[in-house]
Amino acid sequence: MSDKKILIDLRMIELGLAPESASGKKLRKLLSTIPEEDRRRSKRKFRKMWKKIYRSEPELASSLGAGKEKPSGNNMRNRRAWVRRKIRMKIDQE
Image (cartoon, rainbow, N blue to C red; front, top):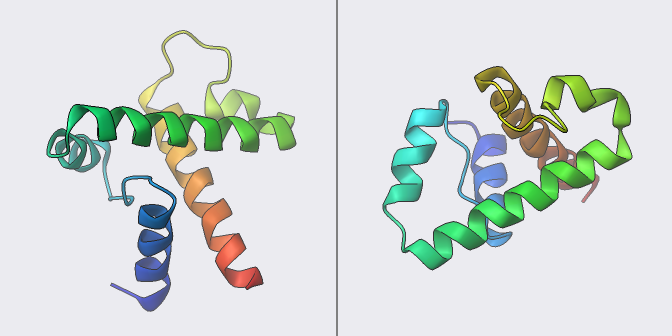
């Protein structure tokens, strides 16, 4: 694992988010190991973060599945990727 990925994962933990993994299955497995209240907080923080991204860049609406009641797997992957990308950009600015 590269230094950049480690820094991103550490920042995600600091923000209260579950560190990103390669697939949604691994992420769900990771989330299932933490207590319900912490899991709920982490999911809520993630949703807040991707919604901020969507509001700041509305052209991403279709790829993020904004407004859909049941977003596709591809939409979910895009959300994880954009959140990770924004965190990486913040780390690069520091």
